[in-house]
Length: 98
Image (cartoon, rainbow, N blue to C red; front, side, top):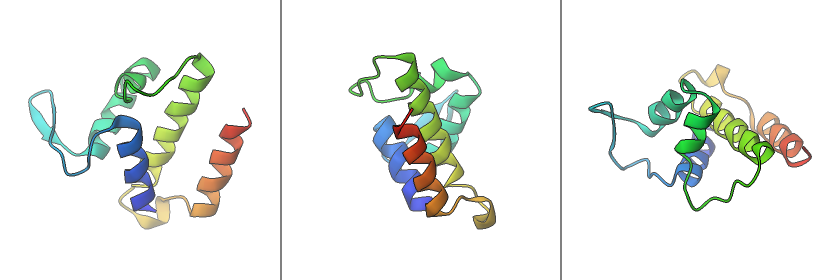
């Protein structure tokens, strides 16, 4: 499940896991980078999304935020806290129908 979360974060941010991310003068992981963006609200989260992604509406932006939050949940340290793939699929299907 961790792999799925990482791939989703790489896809949405266009930042490779193996790349170096500098934030406020320190080097952080991709997960930390995405997590820190949530501290700034929706606009901050959307600001880290790849510019090539077309996000024409607030509804679409909300979906992107939810997918990134789901991706983060898939990378939680404790495996028991991570969603199982069935839950991930259910969440993604619900988002596709909004």
